[in-house]
Amino acid sequence: MSIKRAQKYYDIIVIGAGHAGIEASSSAARMGMSVALITMDLGAIGRMSCNPAIGGTAKGHLVKEIDALGGVMGMLADKTGIQFKMLNMSKGPAVWSPRCQSDKDLYSLAAAEYINSVDNIFVIQDMVKMIDVDEYSGAEGYKYVIKGIRTELGYEIKCKSVIITSGTFLNAVMHTGVSKTEGGRVDEKSATGLSECLSKLGFVTGRLKTGTPPRLDINTIDFSKTEVQPGDKTPVPFSFRTNKSTFPNQKQIDCYLTHTNSETHEILRTGFEDSPMFTGRIKGVGPRYCPSIEDKISRFSDKPRHQIFLEPETLNGNTIYMNGFSTSLAFDIQQKAARTVPGLEKVELVKQGYAVEYDFFPTFQIYPTLETKIVSGLYNAGQVNGTSGYEEAAAQGLVAGINSASKLLKKEPLILKRSDAYIGVLIDDLIIKVPEEPYRMFTSSAEYRLTLRQDNADLRLMETGNKLGLVENEYLDLLRHKYISIQEGIKFLYANTIKPKDINELLTLKNSSPIPQNEFLANLLRRNEVSIKDLFSLDVFKENNFVQSIKSNEEVLNQIEIEIKYEGYIKRQNEQVEQFNRTENLKIPASFNYDNIKSISSEALDKLKKIKPLSIGQAGRIAGVRPSDISAILIYMRG
Image 1 (cartoon, rainbow, N blue to C red):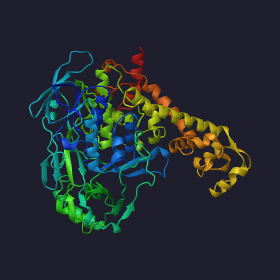
Image 2 (image 1 turned 90 degrees about the vertical axis):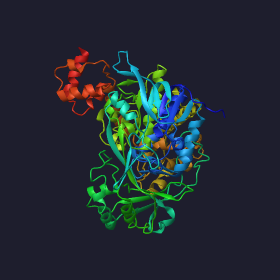
Image 3 (image 1 turned 135 degrees about the vertical axis):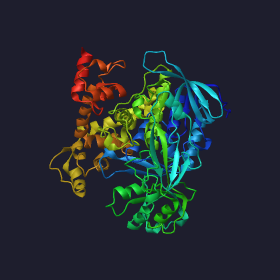
Image 4 (image 1 turned 180 degrees about the horizontal axis):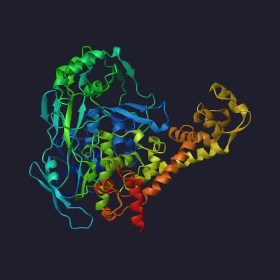
């Protein structure tokens, strides 16, 4: 393999090699751009700062969509996953969510190996201190245009575009009890200079907080006092690129469940007087949906216990991630409290929990392309946009990389609507709601979640990934074959009937009422007790060529079953999507002057000018913009 030498010019520079940086640099490079990926630590590419897991409720949807568009997170997760589980299977398919526990060391190694295999990516170890710009002379409203960057080691590198994916490292400070240390992770320094540079250009910054729990020595845990949490017996991969015949690639392990108790809570409360969160030393806002253990027992004082999941971080190491016990209390309090938890009576902490406070850029300053409104060619992605989580970061990194490359190639940008993807919901929420606390994706955030399922992400988005050059033609051909099989299966079930003598014995076994006369297969499949596998296992179909051809294809059978069982709900949701798209397709010109409309309320005027929505639909979702304001805009546009 030839050695890649650093250059003085790149099309795109990506700052930060976390999950957003990996997707941004990969997508841009594969679209033909020369990319410099700058990281402060070559060993930290794809490092899992917190929980070594990919996916989960709603987050798994994001990973499947990233994969369908040609991203790499799902592929890396499949390669390094040590437990795979489909969550929420007792509920409807809209909320089924894939999750995997990853070996954090293998994940980082796989990420670095992948990045180094992409021809157009050049990895540089340094810290970006300044972004160089020129005055913008165009009519689009930018103040500046990207010229290049300057680094801590004194290098000046020219480029046409910069993507900031610096995670939690901008002016980062770590807190444990009364201890305060500069850095974004243990033993990793803070990134300084960049926030100050952007502030001088006119960007508004804010402070957010996140945290991580202690890591435990596996040899000091009594797992017999905990509940085993196994993975799925037949795990399902994230990526369409994964070879199912050799999957899973790694040995599969169990996780474990235990709980805190009243003694745990009392010990934790003794540390509150030195807590950086309660004493006000932490100014940044933390996530409500993922509170620290001290925040949990303070806010939910009526709850006698809280879940603690014990999750191995690696196959060959001795550390256990104490999920549910994020904390910034003093080390001695952490260990004393942990030892009151069943199974952890003799536990030793390998690494203490801590909180991280860092700079971010409120998202009224970016467009749905993730390009900033002040500097042409500058994009923000990941936790610098106020999000939390590997998956949210990776989704943004992918979109930023695609749109940065598309702008340089003079192609249309990728802007996914709320009706297209969870990624569309994520970015629309960031633009319209401008979160003031770390944003996390939930299935409840997606209005059209029944049609935005994780299992149909490829059907929704792979063709787009192919057009972008990120999904190979061979996979698109396989997708088209899958689609045809699904449609043929649906037609077959609607067109064919079955006799009572061939089905009633099965129906009785399934506690479902027998049929008195011939019945269409589709009507039987709508019954909760009956699955498509039940029907196709009947003797009457043993000689049917079509049934035999799809009988072992789990993906096809799953799609057919969902489409038929939920037909009425899906039809209603598709009608809602059509109505949504009507307002979404009413575009507002970028040069639209809201000051010309005298009947708009002052609050609406301020928000509309600040956010600059792209459509009437988007404008209507802004808090403070009333229906009468939307009517006034429409009247003015038509006049």
